[in-house]
Image 1: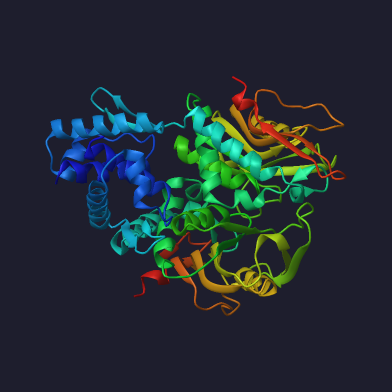
Image 2: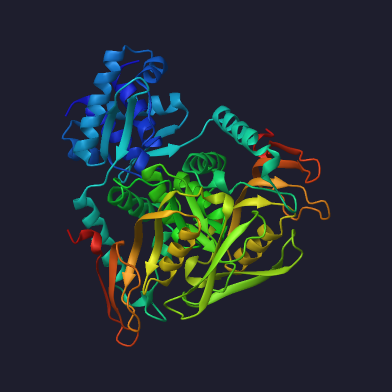
Amino acid sequence: MKRSQRIAAMTHYFKENPRALVSLPFFVRTYEAAKSSISEDIDIIDDMFRQLGIGRIETVSGYSGGVKYVPDYPLASSQQFVDELIDLLQVPSRILPGGYLYMSDLLGHNYYIRRIGKIFGAAFQQTEADYVVTVATKGIPIAYAVAEALNLPVVIIRRDPIVTEGSTISINYVSGSSRKIQSMALAKRHIEPGSNVILVDDFMKAGGTIKGMESLMAEFDAKVQGIGVLAEAEDEEEERRVNNYTSLLKIQDVNEITGDVSVLRGNYFDQ
Amino acid sequence: MKRSQRIAAMTHYFKENPRALVSLPFFVRTYEAAKSSISEDIDIIDDMFRQLGIGRIETVSGYSGGVKYVPDYPLASSQQFVDELIDLLQVPSRILPGGYLYMSDLLGHNYYIRRIGKIFGAAFQQTEADYVVTVATKGIPIAYAVAEALNLPVVIIRRDPIVTEGSTISINYVSGSSRKIQSMALAKRHIEPGSNVILVDDFMKAGGTIKGMESLMAEFDAKVQGIGVLAEAEDEEEERRVNNYTSLLKIQDVNEITGDVSVLRGNYFDQ
C-alpha cells in the first residue's frame, strides 16, 4: 500500500476513534508497512491536523503505549461559527412566547450540532470526566456531540418517571422559567457512584434545571466538573442560581412587542 | 503542500461533509494545487474508501458539478457489529419488566450509536428523503446518527405538549405495550408539507408508536419512505401493525422467570 493510501485510511481511522489509544503494531499489521513508515505517516497526519486546527495525534509512551487523536477546535473557527448562529437567530420570526427563541430547526442539523459539540469538546478537553449528562429532550443531540469529541458515554436524565429501568433516584426542583415544581429521574444503574460528570443543556435562564441536575448528581455522589449551555438568557425576575458554566450564546433581549432580538457571543469567548 | 498532506486534509473534509457537493476549484484554491493533482488525490481517496467499505467519492458532472462523499457500511461489518450487540444483550441482568431489555448503557455510547446510524444510512441510501423523524426520547441519538450518514435534518416528535413552538398538530394513538391512549405532537413549522421522511425508533413491539408517527406524518402530508427500528420484539397479545420496516435486532425471547434472553439479527439481514 502506498503512503497516500495509508494516509487516507489512517485519517479515517483517527476521525472514527477520537481519544482512543491505538498501538503502532496495529497499524503495522493492518497496512503491512514498516514501523518507521507508519511513524512518518502519523507525523504527516499530526502536522496536517494541527495546521487545520482540528487537534493533534498524541504519543503515549511505555509498554502499553501508542497514539491517539485528541480533537480540538480553533477559537477563530468557533467565533466564526457562533457569529453565523447569531445571524441566523436574530430574526423576529424566531421569537417564541416567554422570551424564548425558536432554535429547533438549527438543532436538527448535524452541521450545527457537531460544531457545537466540537467547541464544547475543546472547552472541556482538560476536564477529567466519566460521563456527559443531559436532561431530555433538547440537550440530547448536543450531549452526544460533546461526548463524541471527548470519547465519553452519555447519560440522559428523564423528566417523566421511568418504569422500565430498575431502581431510580428522582428529585424535585423549581423551574426558573415556569416557577413550577418539576421532577427529574435517573435509574441507579446509569452512573457509577463517585464519578465525574460534565452537564450539558441547550438553554439556561435562572438555571433551575441545571441546579436540579446538580442536586441529582449529588445523590449519585458524582462530581460536576463542567457545565455547558448552548444559550444563556437573563431571567428578569430571578438571579442566576448557577456559576461556573460555559455558554456559547447569550440571548440579550427578546422583545415580543417590538420584534427586537439581540444575541451575543457567550462567556466562552470572554477570554 | 505535498500529496500526503492534501490526502489527510481532504479525507478529513469528506468525512466532515458527507453527501455534500464540493467543487474541484474549491480544493484547487484551498490547497493551491493543480486540478489534475486534486483529481488524482480524489481517485486515491475514492479507491481507499471503497477498499475500506466506507463508501465512495461520486462525481457529479456539469456546470454546477463537483464531487461528494457517499458513505456506506459493508454488510459483513454490519453483521459483525450486530453480532457483537447480540452478545452484549443476551445477559439475564438486562431483563426489564414487561419483556424489555436494558439497552440504555449501549445507546449512551457513540461507538454503538454511530455504527447503528451508518448501517441504517446504508440501508436507506437509495431513499429520497427530506427528514429523519423520531419520537422522544430514546430514538433521538439513533436519528441523529442516521441523519449524519444521509446528510438530512432531524425532526423530533414530542410526547409532552410543546408550549413554545407555535401552532402544533397532535394526534392520539394506542401504545401497543401499555394499551394506553397516548399522544404525540409536532409544531407545524418543523416539516414542510409534502415532504418525504424516514422514521426511526429504538424499539418496536406491536408497532403502535410507529403507527402513531405514520398518522402524524399524514397530517403533514408527508410520505414515509422508510422505517428503521433498532430492535423489534414480538407482542404476545397483538399482531404487528406495521410492515415494511427495517430492524437490526430481533428480540426473540425474554423470560423473566428463567432469565433466558434470545436475540437474533433483525430483518435487515434477511437478504
